[in-house]
Image (tube, rainbow, N blue to C red; front, top):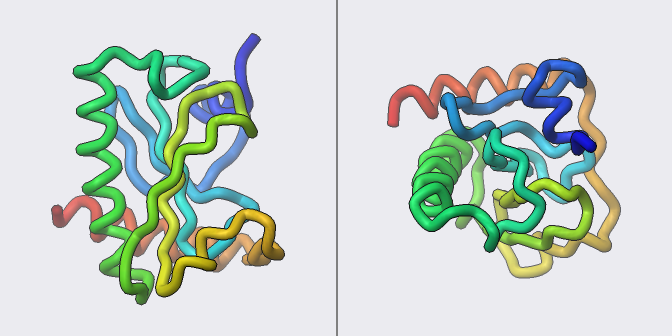
Length: 133
């Protein structure tokens, strides 16, 4: 059974894409804990991040690093926090979250509400920054 992320990859569900290669995709979390909260996924459907082949996991982290640097060029923050929880969707993914303090990574706090235009504008800006890296 395909996960929601596989449906995003296939174009069956819309998303706000940040960056994409033939093997990985980065897109905004639609229920972000911070503005710029991005998900990085492999295009191959793998449920658990530590089941990804070593070389692929390394390349995914390098891709995530480039995405994080692009986010940081657009979203003012001290750091890009990284977390892997892996319980929400049965498809391996990394959360990249712009942070200034530790509590900015708290998934229990109220989610940010952004309109479509804001998502699209930020996605375009970050994508432009990604291509500069």
